[in-house]
Length: 282
Ligand SMILES: [Zn+2]
Image (cartoon, rainbow, N blue to C red; front, side, top):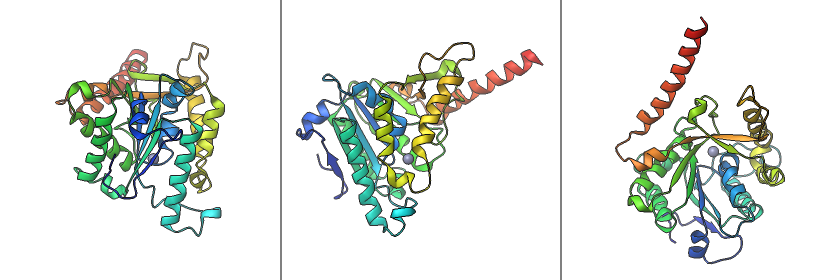
């Protein structure tokens, strides 16, 4: 496969030829940055881990440039930091036994430009080669511009394909802003309590971001536990770690459905729930 950036990085942990690796991929995650897929789509990684009939493929759209750096990374140039982040993502792919890892290496400024031809062409090329059963992507109510841009570009790429070539399910996942606000009936509940050892290893690989000042590894594990504990007030926890996702499948089933209108519909349902409870108890 050829991508628009000469530094695009394609890695197949088991050394299989790329077409074969992509054919094995039943679960695909498109994330903005190195580490996003491990934090938001661990459900998919765990669904595929150790399975002969499933495979997880990760796609990182940006080059991870411009990230903060302290400690041992304090004097790294941006170029050196990008290389570290690419290596960390490859390590995660090996630990998680992914079918393949594709790092497209676009500057985030390009990803945020609507209609950037290279970004769209690269994502389209991936979905021409693989039709995942489940696609994990950022959700449109995330508060990180690059995450939302990747969500929109991914939806545009999928919508450019014939309907029979589109993923069967598309899940909008949580990173910068969680999805606890979705009404329970609108939440896709993803148990992530299997392979906690693997989850810890995958989160811990991204030392450059954690040493860079943020304990993403602890925060991600804490969010999963908090979701499990606070999901249902009257039930004992069935799983002790959960992620929530927004169902974006309607957006790839109906090209006329506007992304904002769809998201607004979910926000309005949340508004209705709060208003109804206050009215009932007031
Ligand atoms: Zn990110």
